[in-house]
Length: 270
Image 1 (spheres, helix red, strand yellow):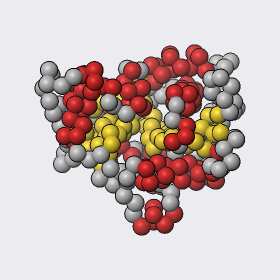
Image 2: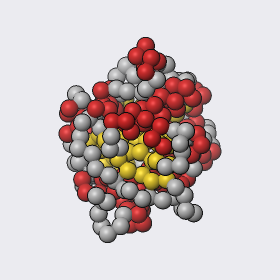
Image 3: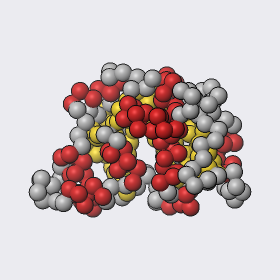
């Protein structure tokens, strides 16, 4: 496992909340984050567990052992393991090499990204139902901003998901992504052959772009508002009951908007 250091020890939410954001420091915290992922992905969102996942009630894969795990903790939440209320998995190129590649490479050709500078893959993001607020999302952004700053990561990427596995049910949402948010060709991931699902399922003018954008998942909308873009094509993930798109965002967008507000004294808390 990677060397783990705190991102922040006291990232209080607005209005005097009790939440903090940092990297997991102990195996028990990573286990608790995996338990939260299981509860959200499998019990709430309808993902299909294999036998081991069902037995352990943990969402785990080979990338967990090499990743850093960003967690939001509520020290007062005694009913939740380690008080963890949100999590994000962070994988850089060195860590990915230890796992045989990035997770996203199983769905998308990400070769254009890997030649574009220092990259960081974000994944397995989830928030406990009681804590789904803008404050928690801002804490996750803060943690990511503090994480990428000293590492000089240039691009963030990962699989962003829409619920369900029927492209026609989210045709408007896919269309607005395909017509308005495609990544520049030089850094554009493409869904793998045989798994490619067309984004531009409707022509311009055949859907309400504003309404389609508003129906996108909140986290995906947040990335797009920060200048994020998507790859060409989507992928149906039957196991997780989702339709995935490859998301790409410049870290400059995040650090310029969030780091100046949240990082104290020009560095990460040690």
